[in-house]
Length: 330
Image (cartoon, rainbow, N blue to C red; front, side, top):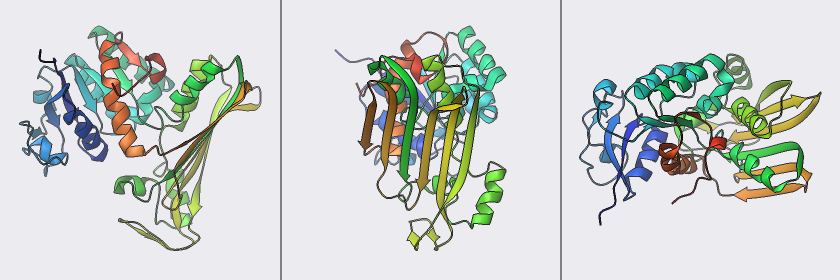
């Protein structure tokens, strides 16, 4: 008996959107029925070719979101931007056509930190009886969902600390630019002050951990500083001389009773070496985990695709990863 396929529309075919679409296209239980992107170079091309497959999928990329969203589909994979206020009109357009959403918008991973926007998205999703999820690796899993899951092994928890070191040397060019690789320290600091250089989502992850643990934080703080090259660093996209910037070091803190009870430490640079994730939970018992091999782009594509079934089955409304059953590849 033929297995009913889950129909998917891809909204945004940048590097991450293409990565998710490849995962979806290679699975027998999914079918891409529509693809949206504003890049003129992709318009009217078969989505299979655009996402790097050596075959056509019989679906052409369109810049007409209104037209494509009229198609019947069970979920829209949304991957166009990091900031919730910028993508809210797109989310609203999708929800009004009664499609579930899995998005890689970092601020959507815990949209409740954004008050009125979250309320509008949640109301619209419930009205149209569909669900909305923001997910990824950080935020989305490594710096919030996984630590939350590990606290389930504890009788009590006093604090949560996460360190994520990311080797950006083989990552996509837009990410290397986003972390400031190649800039002078002065250029980095000036752009960081305008929030043009930063990884989005640490504050959302801090808030989500606190929400899951039912901790009322007094405040959430963030720091950012450049990682400086000690020697010449080359990547496919840039060359970084000694003394110039190779990436960012950001820390997000959750403060309660003058103590930092949540600390999320992220170093993302083109000279970071091996990517490593570590989690420390101060509780009963104390837990320390070390994880090797989580690739930001590949794993973001995986967690987004693997979330589809859970989102379709979830109650209507705005979701976080902490609201869903455990995500698996099946």
